[in-house]
Image (cartoon, rainbow, N blue to C red; front, side):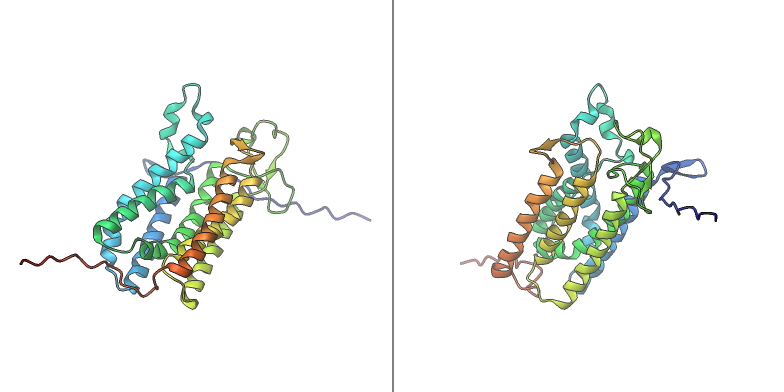
Length: 284
């Protein structure tokens, strides 16, 4: 009696990471990041407008926040993975289209720019941040597919039906004999998509204090990122047996929990004024 062959399935990786449009060759990683930024900015404008703010203010400051986020993301990556740029490869630090944008650097850089802009406009930075974070989750969900095109940041070897095929040239040292790996890009993309939907649901149904939605973003993302980080096998510095970014995720998770609790006790109500009153002076 003939045997039925076992079904073998896996996720193939793209053969190239560029999209040719006439004479132009577009890097898919950068293209997806750009689309993600557009989605996040558009969602922020809509949410800010519903709160009574001027959506045009979001658009005016978006370019500065995005540039600050990209610079922060690249600096964080270069600093924490400096070994990738040793041996005269420092020029590669500027090649962001090849990947290597750290989310925590992007958040820190973007948050710093947002806070400065909000202060100058006399607006509430936390209110703006609460408008940003759902769209940020969706932008991350889309951006992770850039790692698929670059065949990077995948996990340990796996023979699961949804395992990711990695070409021999892209496999890390010590893993040449393995052909399929955990698709951490897919895990994180799905997690971020669910996270964005969860934040929208929570924001619509629970009466949170201002800034608590942002704190929830920090808690939720770091929770997932801790596990994704420990599944990856790309080169990374370790401290006490954990990757640096795993420690960062753990620390920020605890910070987010405390911050959420503190805002619940001391934060402004969600419907508080979006702008500070300008100081007025009276002549004697």
